[in-house]
Length: 242
Ligand SMILES: [Zn+2]
Image (spheres, rainbow, N blue to C red):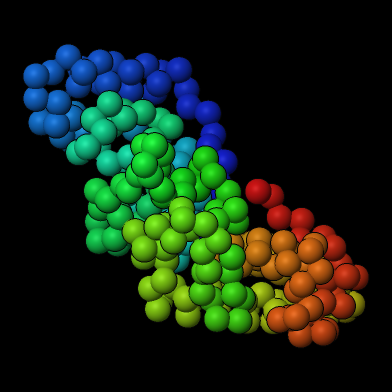
């Protein structure tokens, strides 16, 4: 999981959401009304919402939670079955894969004693403040209570995800070595394709953690020496937009 910026939504789409939020608020059975209105999304406003969220996802429209599968579902960070007032709230929308949405997070939403969410919202929070990543194992290590709860609820410790992050780190190192060879022998365009491949990999958080560890001087503990040397000589590899 990585930090993701939320784009702005058009006035038209925001008005549609506000109108629906008003209809839910005025209803005697808010959950039922919410469910009815949520089923009516074949319109330009929700097309725009999906496109804007999709354009914000990392890589090739990867899930904002697992970063592995294609993000297909508009996800309510605060579950709409509990927080009906946030069912039509742009600030409450993420884009997730159906597995994360339907089989892991579902309607779970733990709160602390003061009513503050214990889950990391990748569009509001920086997951790096709560999670460290072991590049060699692909395991997230929680550095806060919110990190612990996010790993548990989002299922970020699934074996298939840990294996994927570990493999993404191996691929990152291989691509860095390839980048160096191409820079020596061929065109800048070919080298640019390698940087693009690094940035568009699934599990893009791996590149971000590698950059963080590089900047804090600890990457050399886990990265091969030649990879660190190439990164020293080619800082553009870490020119990743966040
Ligand atoms: Zn997912």
